[in-house]
Length: 314
Image (cartoon, rainbow, N blue to C red; front, side, top):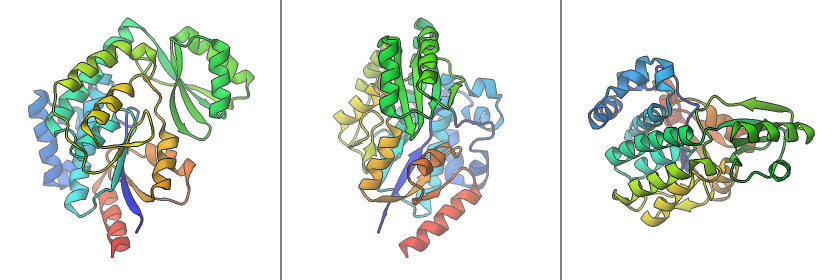
């Protein structure tokens, strides 16, 4: 039987109303939101359910909001017999993956992702930057763009999302030059991203140091299923490997396309996007159109996933 993987979304998937329908329908989801409010001593549930969007979209709020919504959805799925044999999260989603895998307690994972968001926001103030998506160039062509700009501390490839969609991260000056070089190389489109900093780049060095310290202060347990690391596209399960992976992903690119391909090679053919949005399903579909994809953003999506996956299991 083909394996099931849970996929956990990152920043960009947030929306006002996220998780509300799950919390209204399922007690186990509601309990997750209530516990999050207690742990953080703020009404994260109200922020998810009612906004406002500008407050929800602040990095230090978005990341815990996504984690809580994903964990709530995972609890609902698992209560109904849908359990993963592998997992992966896109950027901040990697932390939700480790909570669901049991590597991090919910409380530690929530505090850690909140701290990560704060550190990233602070790093963005110390070394301002942003990000842009380049459409229509492959990895080799992007490497030539980076070489032409020749600013390795100010510019990096941040996300290898799918064939022909690669995100660059860096200072505005370096990104302006990279945009010019990408157009010369034949890029179909350049899309500036609405983010507050240059994530997954050397500009996050101070955030990575702070996160590394925070990771040393909490207990990390062996994962009960392999979680594919953003920075390597390889599964990790040991506590030390998990610590390294979660720290390093702040400085290194998210190898999402490579992660999806590695999962396919390891026998994963059914994937559930766990939490808010449809972004990851779109990226996976551009890598492999033959995999079975499911969502969990509302009760209807959960019921459809549970029914389809139970029928396959039967």
